[in-house]
Amino acid sequence: MGRMKETRLIMGMPIEIEVVDNVAQDTLEEAFAYLETVDARFSPYRSDNELARFNRGELALAASSAEMQEVFALAERAKKETGGYFDIRRPDGRVDPSGVVKGWAIRNTAARLRAAGHQHFMVNAGGDIAVSRKSAEGKDWSVGIRNPFNISEIVKIVYPRGKGVATSGSYIRGAHIYDPHAPEQALDEVVSITVIGPDVLAADLMATAAFAMGKRGIAFIERLPGFEGYAIDRNGVATLTSGFGAYLEK
Image (cartoon, rainbow, N blue to C red; front, side):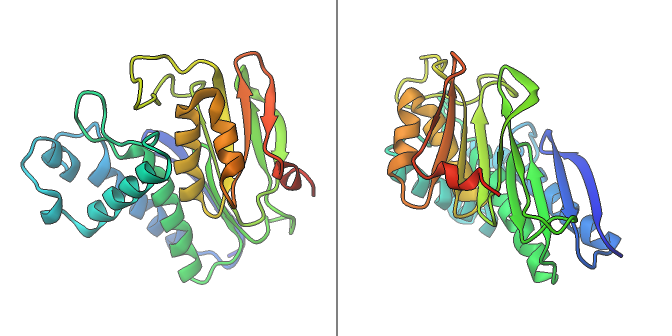
């Protein structure tokens, strides 16, 4: 079969998968089934999963699954790379690795599609996006950056060309990101930051950290080799890193 495109609600968000080349229905079924298993393991809203057992002190990290150990190791590395601005430990002491899991799961889904022989596809989970090669129209995949003050409006079209894209902001899910160094302080100076990075996981981790930094976040992205960013502040003013413009051109 040719192109197939489907959206399902998993991890509390719409996840869209579009595969352009030589796709069978079980390709999408297997991809979504994988995402369901990730959600079952890591959802912070369940009391019966591995994460809940860890947070209750019933399960040591060393005795947990390989997947959980990988996610925790990625989180620890991101914490070091961002000076503590990326932190999966909440102010109440619980661990919520959702900030790693989404990008990690999308990256892994893309890898599974490639391993199945697919070259042209897109996976989009609530603004975390992995793309490969071309769209159904034979063009570069394009990603819209939404206006955080009017989410039905697109303010920029980005052409990631195989890179990962992630957006962090308070305008869709509310204030779910905080500054680990000052958790009681409202993050209201920047309302949205979109990051392009080597892959969707890297982009997502750095977008989350940059958002937690407030108005200094875009300068942090500017200094990161291989990353570009686009921030929108509470006054509607956009700030772009010096190389972001290359992704705005066809």
